[in-house]
Image 1 (cartoon, helix red, strand yellow):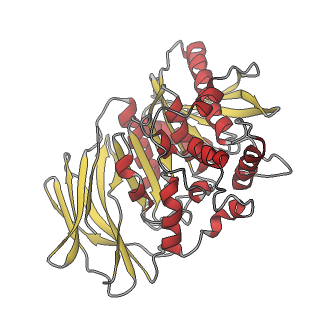
Image 2 (image 1 turned 180 degrees about the horizontal axis):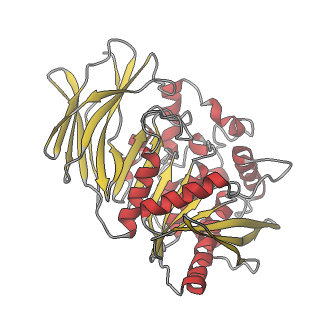
Length: 441
């Protein structure tokens, strides 16, 4: 298999990825009116207030209370915290990280460290989504419930992603008002990030909100859902057990109805790709049990944005299982935010997978010489690498060109990709290439 690609200028689980085979011919037009109309619909319950301000040796923490909306008679309330380390000044673009749950001592430390790396204020929006609801349902079970209710009623407000997106949009409203009130400073733009279903929310928010300057969706390797489902069956021989919440609700396989097709067209970020033109940093776990190892290949070339990908070897859906460098996710996310917020430049990469002298080869070109480069390689008996161990292999760096070759598999399957290390203001961060899966011939 030969392919090439060029780039143009975490937490809780989510498993909807493989639910849908979208109607054939569904194109990449403007943002779906259903989502946009829901987000823009006036809601008198929206309000925010500053509950507290804490100053310590690390910096300042602002604690806001936000009511983003009333959805299906349920008021959505959120904790919204802003972190500013000492020495960091307000910037017109800030990092907005959407999360579940509430703030904790750990999340506050993470927020302050992220703000240092970004050299900008960082806001954490909690409570995405509002849960538990409907007899204690959470996460995938809750999403599945709202999708079933939409299919039964046709009420376009039901899909849970709609209020999740609106929560981020209203958080932006609150943060802009807060910045004027507290700092006498105008915040204009946001770098938005989040993991899993909050990464999904990140994609969709960018499709409908012009204040989004850049995005960093994490562990949501599932765009182009109509192609992902059969690819998962090909790779695993069955649907992943991680999507059982949807299988039990008869959402997998997708009902062949007009309403079901409309639902998937409203929630698949791939459908919005013409709107997703902002710089995009995709962060994935190489052992994520929800997605196939090469899921990115089913949508990468369709995206319109300047984009980069970083795989974390030997890490699952929570991105925490990598024992090599526990800082790589925080550094990569922080460096990307720093670059976007302060008008710096990301490296421009192109790569090509091919064969040379009987060996699978990867060639990467970078307009900036990387500090280091390597290949990551994993093996599996079947086309399922979720439990495979990734091993590092050397790659040759010759100026701005990187070349690496591996042996073809003796049996079963082998997968590999390239990884390059860069630095910005002393922060080491990582960029990857696409995966290539090999089968013994």
